[in-house]
Image (cartoon, rainbow, N blue to C red):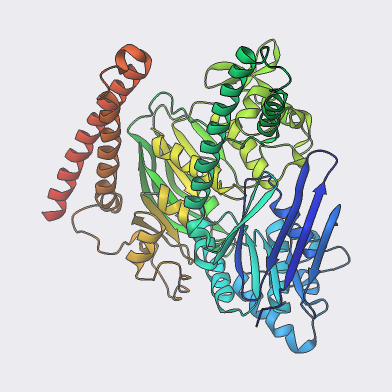
Amino acid sequence: MARVPLLQLSDIALTFGGDPVFSDLSLVVQPGDRVALVGRNGSGKSTLMKVMAGLVEADHGKVVAGPGVSVGYMEQDPDMSGFATLGDFAVHGLPASDLYKVERAGEGLKFDPARAVGTASGGERRRAALARLMAEAPDLMLLDEPTNHLDIEAIAWLEGELKATRAAYVLISHDRAFLRELTRATLWIDRGMVRRQEKGFSAFEAWRDTVWEEEDLSRHKLNRKIKAEARWAVEGISARRKRNMGRVRALQDLRAERAAQIKRQGAAAMALDAGPKSGRKVIEAQGISKVYGDKVIFRPFDLRVLRGDRIAFVGPNGVGKTTLLKTLIGEEEPDTGTVTLGTGVEMAVFDQARSQLDPEASLWDSLTSDPEMRVSGKADQVMVRGMPRHVVGYLKEFLFDEAQARAPVRSLSGGEKARLLLARIMARQSNLLVLDEPTNDLDVETLDLLQDLLDQYDGTVLLVSHDRDFLDRVAVTTIAMEGDGRATVYAGGWSDYRSQRGTPVGTAPEAPKAKAAAPKEAKAKPAAKAGLSFTEKHRLEALPAELERLEAEMAKLQELLSDADLFTREPVKFRKATEALAERQARLSAAEEEWLDLAERAEG
């Protein structure tokens, strides 16, 4: 017996005064579906979800829910006008027997129901909206970026709830680990077309690449056919004009077909320039601590950050990750202890609040008003890594079109704001990159590109993120802040930290046991080796990963230099590759000596 669809969209067409967002779109959501809705920023994911929820009316076509089917939608910016507190909003419309569900969801998602709507942050509003939806338990849940502003514990809680639910759901999320864990089908929006594959997000990238390869091959064949027909038209048309007019019309049809093809949007042309090297020691923190009133943010803590380190800070929201990060880079003063920046440090900061962006300023002004990017006497140019560039040309590299250049920042989506801020910080040279929640709202392709850039970046990276996949790909050291003022250093990324801590990867951390802890406990570390300081123990455990990374980078450079024609064809590239290989060899030798020294002292 055929299943009755929960939701069916038929021949949907939608425009917003310009090019069509969708045309001839049809799709079905069945009972039990667990669907990832993916696509580039600006491709129409949120718009499609609003059409599915009945909040946006299509220009053409039908949206039909099954008999008695309830559809619930969690939007990115919930309207809470008319409600005094987050709790009032979350319980609105629920029967008294279901109020406990909001309280339970509130505990898992960590929102305060007594918080006044007027003083609540965007993240708190979203958590309240999500708690309300989970309590309503509709037959079909439409979830637009539910993990934004959630910490890893709350994400793990939400994963567990969605795994256990019998409801169907459609998910938009930038969190690749979240999508891989939960989805069994994928809807992909690409240039106004929606494709479906009956496999979860884990199979998406291979599917996307196959589709694009087939598309490129088809376009190549079409171009060859047009070229051959055009040659015939020039050489043979005059001899038999009437007989061959059909072939001429066929050539016109081929050209029209090519013109109608919508070109794929390329990846953002992002680049990082580490510039002059910093000193070997980038940050030296000794005995630093921070307390706000009765709350201990972090107890006395030591950390040495060396050139080339990739350090991630993880922990629940509100535990103090950003405060510790700002203390380490000198933006906040510690209550005790000292922080010393090394020599030659040039810092670039990506802050999670996007406070460097004025919402009323245009994209153009956001770049030209930056003193480090301003070109004297040139109102239409910006300085990008030491070279003047036209403002619009540089914005296009980050996937903004000319019409957006004069638009206000407030008109941008979350992903577009993130790309604009990346455009600002990537315009300057830096050897210390400080990234506080850089992955929020970025699409999969941009996340992949950012990760690749960080892999190749010669400087030092400090990173705060709740994106487990991104942490595993980037970090070689993890500092976990788990409450009670503790900050503990682990070798490796998120999965390594969870493994060392003895918790299965992907589960929420256990609540720390309350106990009186001496200040020095913040520096304790599992399996510590005697004879070394805390920082030296951490360094000894982190060095093998650094050695492996340097060897991998050297292998890539050696492969590049093995091209016998490289020097003649691209002398500048040959020189840079040679210099980079020599520099990494020196770093490898120094790291090996350091490891031998620390290992011997630990043994002794």
